[in-house]
Amino acid sequence: MNALLAADLPYWAQSLLRVLGGVVAVLLPAGTIVYVFLFKMMSFMQSRLGPMEAGPYGSLQLFAEVGKWLQKEDITPERADRFIFKIAPLVVLTSTFLLVAVVPFGPDAWFTNFEAGVFYMLAVSSVSVLGILIAGWSSANKYSLLGGLRAAGQLIAYELPMVLAVVGVIIQAGTMNLQEIVVSQNAGEIFGWNGLGNPFLLTQIIGFVIFMIAVQAELTQTPFDMPIAESELVSGYMTEYSGFRFLTFFIAEFATAGVFSLIASVLFLGGWGIPFSWFGWSGIDDVDNWMNVVGPLIMVTKMLLLSFVIMWVRFSYPRFREDQLQRFAWKVLVPVSLVNIMVTAILKVAF
Amino acid sequence: MLAADLLVAQNIGFGLIALLMIVGALRVVTVNNVVHAALWLVVVLSGAAAQYLLLSAEFVAITQVLVYVGAVMVLFLFGTMLTRAKIGAEADLNNKNWAIGVPVALLMLGVMTWVLIDGFGDEKLPNPDQQVPVQALSDDIFGPYLLPFWALSFVLLVAVIGAIVLARKD
Image 1 (cartoon, helix red, strand yellow):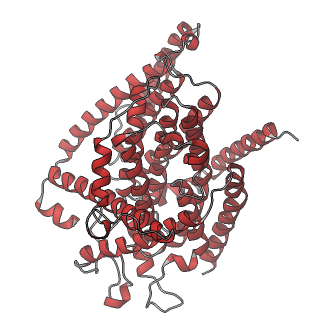
Image 2 (cartoon, chains in turn purple, green):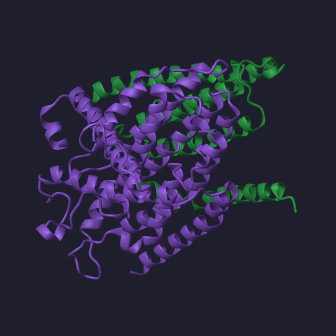
């Protein structure tokens, strides 16, 4: 994709295509996750059918929902801080868009190829905290403020295990570039056998589990949904939002779930690649061009798999208590991930 | 694209971001709401990150976002919202001694300008569109600058332990 773009198109056209690609990469996973998991899978798990009226098996329900939200009145509370109240959902959504910018979808199908891609991903994912905090504060509602504060405390606590879980992958791959992490997994070998490549899932299984738990918490999905605990805080920081601003929060939540699944599949499941030995490739330059089409499909499959796990956990477990949540992050996840880093580093030097 | 064109575009970008940062910095001290001041500070700090990007110091820019926007400012906002963060203007927010701050700020500006001009003069970046790989950076930090790195870590560790000691009730 990129080689094609660089050859024929002027800069502005490339940029436009990238923006469009980014919009697709954010909205498509969000829509899929909401329909397949939130509407259908949750219904089946609760022994009901879910939406059935709009389109075959309710497949057009999503458009009906979006239409409904867009029609609703855009309410701003009287005593709210108007400007900040209005931009807060956009800050959260911006963080999602920035996040998808580093995900590689194929040998040339990427938006940007940051040298420090992993680090960038961790940095921009923390920007959404800011949006959530100011959304909670500017609503001029005690429940919203409490929800915002809980979200901030939770996201700070779980960002640390996330960073530390990724460090193991970085040590093993020897790079922070997501593209090179993909290559090193697919070109790798397990004790001389290269039929499967070497997905870091096998060696970094602890890191993977910690990463997925931290993702669950960052997304404020049950069992980590204290910030929006509807039985105690109404809807937390989202309480006062209506219409398309609520829709923005909603899209951001599920799009971020999709993007984090994409990133987890890049870090741990081999990303867009298939084991290079199958076709006799030895490096990224050998990879055939058709991988630019197949790669995104592989990524979407892996994304659906991982977001299925996220949603499965979400619908299966009750909510943590606030103190249990903090204790779990600081006393279990952080020490375990530190030990994981040490063991990885020792084994890296030893082999 | 010609290197000269690139430099022009970068200079325009630098000017715009610098202007935004200056306005933001002034608003931080003049605005009469704590949370608004903190948010203007976010603008200034993100502007600094953008400037680092223009200098092709990618890693430093990302660190700036991660540490300042993602952690420090969130803690700032968290703290103010937990204690005092009214919506709307507050009357007693400005310090009475703000006039003394102006000469101090001007003095700082003078000293820093002098240091920069004295230290670098007409020197230019060796290669403006080539970025330093992250590995070279880490080799430097954990090689020749290991001792300062340890010293900084020690300071932070002391602060963390101090915070725990202060916060513990038993």
